[in-house]
Each structure stands twice: as structure tokens, then as C-alpha cells.
Length: 404
Image 1 (cartoon, rainbow, N blue to C red):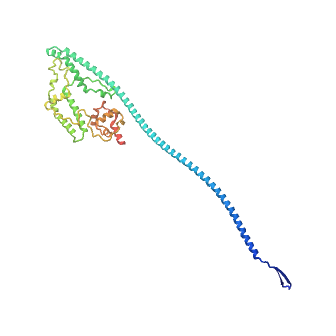
Image 2 (cartoon, rainbow, N blue to C red):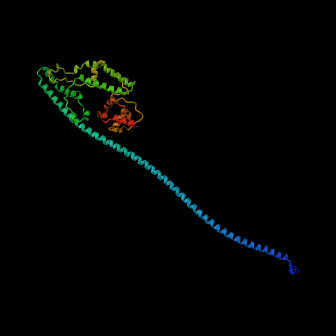
């Protein structure tokens, strides 16, 4: 449908406008339907495309995930193998560490043994050198003793010659009949009594050969020998008393014994030794004023001499005490619980250490505490006299005590 309309402008002109009126509702409806259909088609197509892309993406990432899982499984397997290998290495390391520690301990033990062996070797070398020196000294002393024995034989020969020249009277003839026994007794007396005052080989071991002086043997009387024996006994008793603790039963017994010996000193000197001597009256064949006058006697044993000199006044025999023995070492101090290696003292070997242990000396403190009497008493039980002072045992023991 066409509509005509006139429009008057300001200039007064009239313009005719024709308009065509069209029914747009159906058209708009078609447009809307078309849009809806297009949208739906587009949505459908877009959805299919999105689904396809999503499926493709899912497939792609699923493949990636599967590959990652496969790699993770391989990694886990490798990790398990690595862990097993690591555990094996750790066990092997522990075994190696144990073996190394055992080897180190064994090496330390071997080193200690080697050190101890070297120390023992050094000590043995020193002791061997000392023994060689003592052997040389012993040889020198033996030569000295042989020379002394030769002098004694010369003296005996002279005495026999004097006896043979002086048999003019019958008493002299009687003396001549007993001459062999008299000469034998003279040799025994000279060997046991006169030689006691001459330096012994044990002392000669530690002296230079130039220090030996030949001493003419002298014959002693039983009284002199008894006096020397009494002094030796008193000295030994004093040394043993000094080592015993005050108030002990052993010390009281030794003090009683010493007092008995001292009380009977004068009686011992006054009692009958005349029966054992040959006086000038009995030996008329010997000149009284000559230098060869003899007093020949058969030296009694120490126990017989003690009984003869003391008679009925002899001290009563004490019952044996376990703390004091006749030939025991200087008094055994109470053995400490601690035992030191006495071989560290220069001059003490394994044999000497065992002997000191038997005597009750097991620590440096005991050796360091020895006084003059204790040293003398201990020295009496050693094979070579004077080695305690010569080798400085006490000083070495004191140093070990101070350093411990």
C-alpha cells in the first residue's frame, strides 16, 4: 500500500512525499526465526567442534599422563634398585668400618707388643752387658782367690816345715802324730774364719782389679769368730726389726731375742773355749815368741758355737712365727694392692722382679721407702751385693712415684 502526502516547506513550496506502507511483522518474525535457527545450528556446530577439540585434548593429555606414569614407574623401579644398592653399600661400609677398627686395634696391639719387645730387648741387652761385666769381674775375682789360695798353701807348707823342725821332746812327738789332723784343721779354720775378714768375691765383682790388695791370711780364735757371728746376728736382727711395724708379734720376738743375746754377751765371752784351742802348753813344739804361733781349732758350727758359749744361759728357742723366718727376706711390709712393673727400674730384670715379688716388694713405693737398714737387709738376699746403691734403685723408684 502506497500513501501520498504533501509537505509545505518554509519557502512555501509544497513537496509531495510518497510512502509505501509494508506489513513488517511477518518479516521480523522470519528474521527472528532465522536467527534462532542459525544460532542453534551454529551452537550445534560449535558444540561438535568443542567436543572434538575436547576429545582430542583429552586423548593428548591422557597420552601424556600415561607416558608420565610409565616414566614414574620406571623411576620407581630405578629408585628401588638404587635403594637396594645403597643398603648394600651401607652394609659393606659398616663391614669395612668394623674390619678397619679391628685392624687398627690389632695394629695398636702389635705396636704395643713391639714396643714392649723393644723395651725387653733393651733391658736384656743392658742386663747382658751387666752380666758380662760381672762375669769379667768374677773371672778377676777368681784369679784373685786362686792367688790367695796359693798363699794359703804356702803358709800351710811353712807351718808344716816349722812343725817338722821342732819335734825334739816327747810332747812334740805327740804333736807330730797329730800333725795331719792339725794341718787339716788349720786349713779349714783359715778357710772359714780367717777368710771371712778378707774381701769376698761378691764384693770383688764390683771393684777394679787395681783395688785388690793381697792380704796375708790370719788364723782367728773361736772367741773372735763367735764375736763376729754375734755381731752379724745382731745386725741382721736390727735390720729386720727396723722393717717390722711397731707392736707386731714378730717384732716383739725379735726384740726379746736381741735382748737375750745382749744379756748373755759377757757370759758368751767368758765360757769354755779353751777346750778347742791349742795353747802353748799343749803345743810345746811351737815357739811362743815367734810370729808363727798357732791357735788351731776346728771351727764349730754356728748353732754348736752358740750352745757352747752360752751354756745353760742360752736364750730359749722361740717357736717359729710365720712373720719371721730364719732365712726370710727383710721384713715383709704389707703388700699393697697395686703392683708396678719393677722391670722399669734399670738393673732389674724378670728374674730379679720375681725374686722381689717373693720377698714382698711389688711397687715402686716400697723400693722408694727403703732406708739404709732396709737396703742392707734386702742386699743380703741378692746374688751380687751392693747393686741397689750402685744402680740407684731407690732414686729411680722415687722418680717413678713422683711421676705417677
